[in-house]
Image 1 (cartoon, rainbow, N blue to C red):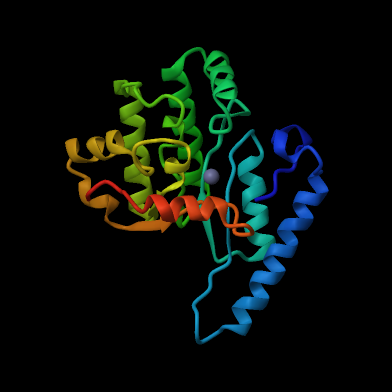
Image 2 (image 1 turned 135 degrees about the horizontal axis):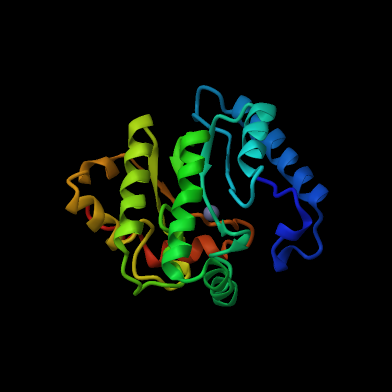
Length: 227
Ligand SMILES: [Zn+2]
């Protein structure tokens, strides 16, 4: 989804504006709807968007966008805590840790922002459930964090969400796809293991032109944890 505050644009978007992001999204939906109509009866194409939850008001923005474009589905994702990106760079992640007052607080903030999305938006797919792991692989889950993970999984399962198995982790050098082994272990410990049995397989490839990122995923192959 297009971010709507200039301060939320990433460094790589320095030549963009809030308006250009909105225009790109509009073009995406227009083209996707055209293809949906053209291939009707041959391919079941759904038109959706990935969410953000950056700041108070983000959730309403998601609601407005879904309403305006009558989107077929949403991937409910969180990429920020306290308005700071947690998956863009190690430097930004460290800044997020500092502002949150430590790793455990940051994790709790992430899963609370995710919970807000799950409750208020009910996205059809939960995107990269444990993205917060990206720059802190070895960090053990505190009991409070684990409780929030259990809460979020249970909430998503109750309204019928799919859980994204996201291979972007391989591009970032992580040992497995999202959700990673420690999340699956929380599932197993709490006997809600089967809840991950509704997966959505996604590469999060971002780029097709040139194919570099997609090719990376394909070369590495799928390597997801056994469910
Ligand atoms: Zn994402």
